Length: 221
Image 1 (cartoon, rainbow, N blue to C red):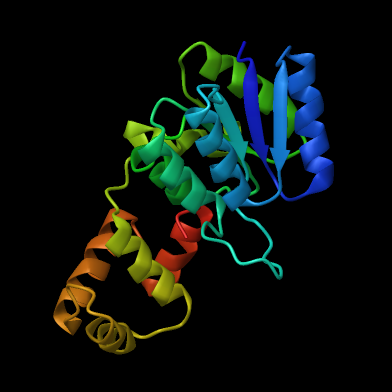
Image 2 (image 1 turned 135 degrees about the vertical axis):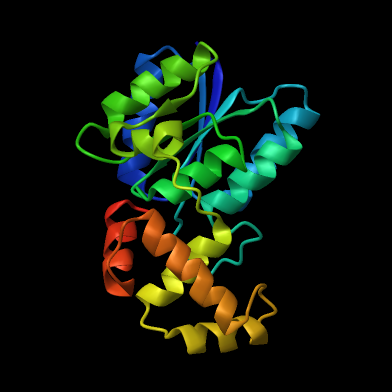
């Protein structure tokens, strides 16, 4: 079992629950912070003192307040930590259950486990910790399909943004104008039409409304 773990969570009751779990698992040093910046500074200092943390358990969303933050979200924190401290084990513990968001955290930011906050959250977190200790990855049952190659939907970040804008009620012409303004490529109306046609075929959707409903059900947006 790991000996030194940091919890990054702004909700005090959840913080206490995770702390209790780690204590029961035999973790000797458990530190807690409620801001992502504090998490980064603690991890950085521990490295400089040659007393590094072995694992961090972090939420994704942190409620903004009067305090200005360099890392305003758990995702920003995770991205920074995995670049600067690649051997540090990272478990995300969040209410977020969109498959694309989870897939991005694994494929781009190389987290070690993703646990959904739910009725079985602490039970699954216990399993996740034990799996990570043994060098394995873990996903909660709610998002277990996120990395399933048989369910690979061949959607990229451009597709997700396109579908998200479509779900907000933007027409293809409006999306094209927006992309041209924000220098997002491809931005031509014909390119957007072709991409949406491809996605409709891929998801077996009858029309744009049906397509949005399907990807929402899949947790992609």
